Amino acid sequence: MVLFKQTQRAKLLKQFHLEVKTELEAIVEILNWFEQTTNFLLSDKCRWQCKLAITEAFTNTVLYAHHDLPATTPIVLEINFFANFLEIRLYDHGGPFDIQTKLRSMRKDNGSSLEREGDRGLLFMKELTDDLHYLRLSGGYNCLVMRKLIQDQL
Image 1: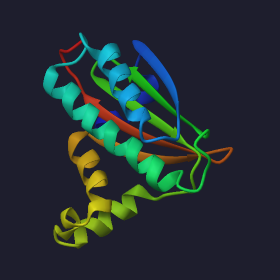
Image 2 (image 1 turned 30 degrees about the vertical axis):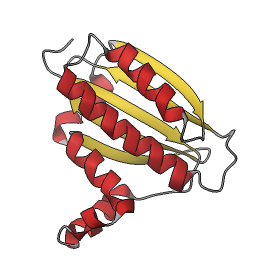
Image 3 (image 1 turned 60 degrees about the vertical axis):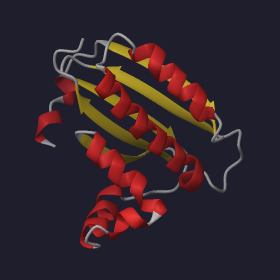
Image 4 (image 1 turned 120 degrees about the vertical axis):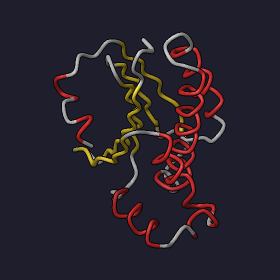
């Protein structure tokens, strides 16, 4: 998205990290952590939208990207605050995944993707954020990047 092309030049104001195991139960810890770190930095609506996007992203990571990995495999979350936007990063050890191709194919399904449980999470993440990317990093890591505009909230 053009809006976020200048991310490398944007000044990072605050950053938070959390590492959890590949267990669905860790979502409680993640959401508590997110609530505590963003409590006075985001509006209630923005925080709720981000928490839903994080829940979908984390659940997809556990169920799909890490489905054949041990529960001890770490998943790292990072929250980066910039002047006008929030960036949420989720790092996993799964195989490559082309999120843009998947989203395009879902759009061609004429909305039937909402009826399939496995695809709804991607659609929710796309709708709840202003920018969504999945990057393959060196060393076999992936990074899901979700950005949300937060003007006048810091």
